[in-house]
Image (tube, rainbow over the protein chains, first blue to last red):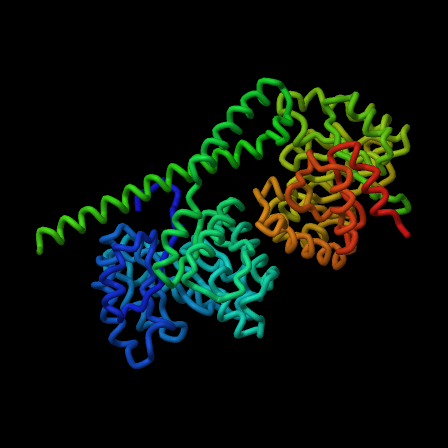
Amino acid sequence: MAKGRPVVRRSGLTMPVVTARFVDNAWRRGCDFVTLDLEDSVPQHLKAHARSLIKDAIPKIERGGAEPFARINHDYVEADLEAVIWPGLIRVKYPKTEHAEEVRRLDAIITRLERERGIRPGTVEIDPSIETALGVAHVYEIAAASRRVKEFGATTGGYDLSRDLGVEMFVDFDQFVYVKGEAELAARALGLGVRAAPFVANTTGSVSDGKRAFAQAEAARKCGLHLGGGGLNPAVVESHNAGYTPGEEDVRDARWVLEQYRRVIASGETWLEIENRVIDAYEAARARDTIEFAAACRERDRDKAEAVARTQAALALGA
Amino acid sequence: MNQQRRSWLLTPLSRPREVEDAARCGADVVVLDLVELVREEEKHAARLGVAAAIGTAQAAGAEAFVMIDPLLAYADLHACVWPGLAGVVIARAQTPSQVEEIAALLGELEGSRGILPGSLEIAAALETAAGNQAAYEIARASPRVRTLTLGRADLVMDLRPEPCGEIHLLPYLMQRLVIVAGAAGATPIGAWWRSPDRGLLATPQNTGAAARRGRAIGFKGAMCLRANQVDALNCAYARS
């Protein structure tokens, strides 16, 4: 991804790298990122085979303009990293992180593999998942353990955490206030990208409900959050893209706020009440953020569309 | 601390008239602001008015605190440490060392200006993520730290409403602050705001509701930005 541009990671799919039809069609899904999975979705007897597939799967993901990520197994760090650190890979997701030491070990191995394989040092990010009580207890040290940790949160660990702690998953109130708070405070204190999920009730447990996915993404956007955690079903990708992208009305409103803020500055006040809203430096900052992120989303969507067009053209030639 | 500190009303030092109004409206504490509500180019003039403003607050029976900018601590403290001052609120308190530095300066100024040594208090406003992460260390950085608040963390950290009406992350941060304050021997102040309230536009009714929720989770008083919120805070945080 080009430098200096804000990261746009609204939508993603996690897929077993051993399921060829998922990987081969991933470029059609419109994802900002795709996570090639070696962990839960790959049965034990296929782990070795799965490792052998990653290197070739990475360019297949890039065909749609998505960023290729890989999820490795907590217990096979060496073998999995050997198999996934190839040019093009952007991020390694490490499940069930419990200690900062684990992250430092990943960092050391990735650093060696980057050197050996001609990848620019520091390219590959580490995404430590917090999925157990021990992970929650060490959340700040884990997030601070490596400069490769660029974004952080406890949004995707729900299932495993609920198993570890005996917390029910599908309830109509926020059962992870503390866990999510600890992770988000650590992320913010360290200046990392914040991946957080405002509470939106999911009492059915559906992972393919597009409307619910949209509501979740929209709630995050309205909280000022830009980073999605991805999903498992292609049905949610477009909902996540749409929910995280500021709409035209949001951009118009943001421009109005900036216009009004100019009036505040001209008035010599620090804030004014205009049309029942407070207009001050904070509102202006939010408005600027909305406008900038909307532009970044547009650019990302154009990049993806161009990648898809190139792939279609290549396929047409080949056919 | 014998005084009741149910309501802490913020008022810009750049507006002497507003200071007078604030002092007269029944606030237990008037917080004379040198940080957020005073434009950069007005700060110098605002600093010159602190001594008079402290007198105005005291004459009306309110305690006077000054809200200072830790990055401008030297100038702000020299401008505000005068007899009659109860203490300072450190806006955007980030690190224990900041607090130590400010506490040391307060000690020097107490000595040179004839104020009882150790009497000036610090209220730390933990408005940033780093400040909240280091909350316990900040609270323990000086015996002068008697009060903790999240201040305007919702704005400084850009925390916005979730669909359920809670402000993102604040339920966690509020409870964390109450525990940290208890552990460090400080008093937590704040109110449990919900959407669509926003400090400057909250009605007296909504202020009362936020204060009752705040009291229920352990806050002992709250800051506010408008005189019409003071009665609601005094009522909700009255000691029974």
